[in-house]
Amino acid sequence: MDDKKIEMILLDKPFITKRDIKFIYKQAIGNNSNLEVVIGKLKKLFLVMMLLKILLLSIGVTIFITGDSLDFISYAVTVTFGIIVMYFIAPMVLGAKLFFVSLK
Image (cartoon, rainbow, N blue to C red; front, side, top):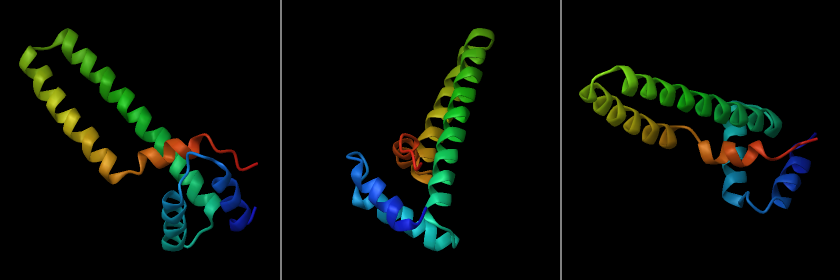
């Protein structure tokens, strides 16, 4: 599928903005690839980040059950900071939006 068809599909979705499409184009130009590849990478990034959050949550529950309260507090502060940094580095929201877009 060519880039114009993909852009038209994205424009039809009410939850994807023109700013999101510009970001996807910028990623495609920067990586020397087409929109389909960039959208696939963003979807994959979203899934990996969600699995990482589930892993961090399960580690936190384990520390809460088996560990000391100070260990849990320090872990909770560190994980909170880590998740905030993840949102600034990884385009999580855009990946979540694109996860519900089918290009077929």
